[in-house]
Amino acid sequence: MKKLIIVSEQKSFVKRPLSHDAILGQERAFLEHGKGYVEIRYISFLIKGFNRLSSKVGMKPLCDPFTLKKDQNVVYLYIAMHINYLKSNLHNLKRLQKSGNKIAIYVWDCWSPEYEEWKKILEDLKPDFVMFSFKQNWLYFREIFQNCYWVAQSANTYYFKNLDMAKTRMFIQMGRVNKPIHEKILAYLNKKGLEDSDENYVYRRKKKEALFPELDVLVKEINRSKYIVCIPKIYENPKRTGDVCAMTGRYYESIVCKTLIIGKKPLIFDELFPEGGMIEFNEDLSDFDEKIDELENNDEKYRTIVDRNYDWFMSHHTWAHRLDRIMEIINEDERR
Image 1 (cartoon, rainbow, N blue to C red):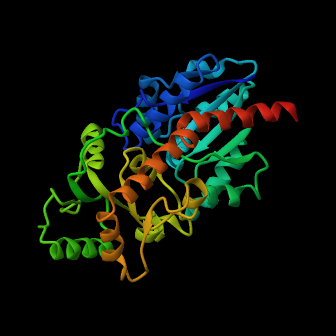
Image 2 (image 1 turned 180 degrees about the horizontal axis):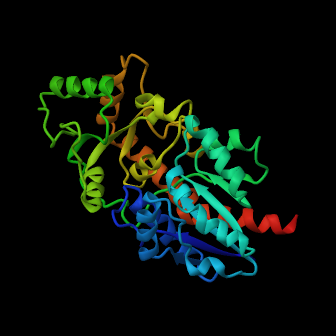
Image 3 (image 1 turned 135 degrees about the horizontal axis):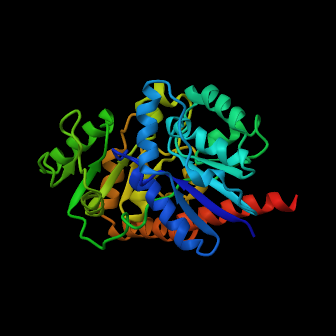
């Protein structure tokens, strides 16, 4: 069985990106579940900082010392939240290859307007394995690269979890507000005699407001909300996504908090979770009140959906399950 070594920069950031906690959860789960065959090597904080400065004056980047070592029966895994992360670490990955090591890339966010750029980088790097978290990416790139796989995302269950809190708030909507659903929620609350307050419906009320910057607070606020609005990014920012209708981390995080998702399904939602796992509406939202009322009047139905989703996640979609799939991929390659 091969060993997996994660090339991590989570200790090398001067300013932590929004993705820090998500990738940290993935790395931690891999280390715990893969005890004995998963290790981690951190990119030096000092080298990373030097390279940030040197890139501005055109100096050649430095590589970490561990990239000079050849490891037998090992695959190095780099987790790329998006293309800029991969670009900034190409020198380390190429040095590992030059030393005779195998490389795997796990790609979180990849949108079709970036496909050509991704293609050029991957053709240049020639990794031994490329794993995409979005199925549409895999369907596209498997026509170009033979060593291409789909390994879906998950949630950081060290933070996101069911806290068994009372559902004291009806609605929560993170990030950019989806205007049609937002207006329907406000009208529904008004009809029920409930005011537009954070106690009933929390959303970003100022354009650049960070709703819950502290992760532990965010988890509590999702837990105590009965319904969370999730809309694939394609409906909010098609310029960025192109035709990729992806299932991102917020869906998994909501499910593991036992909060019911309402909104629009990503293309693969029904492929990953049991039928009826989230609530969708007619295109004109004409059935919004009816579907919410049905759940409000039938707590058993609500509980059945969130409990089934949670159980399915825990038995099929944790990061431990994703690691098992990655190990299957890299070990199957050896048997060919």
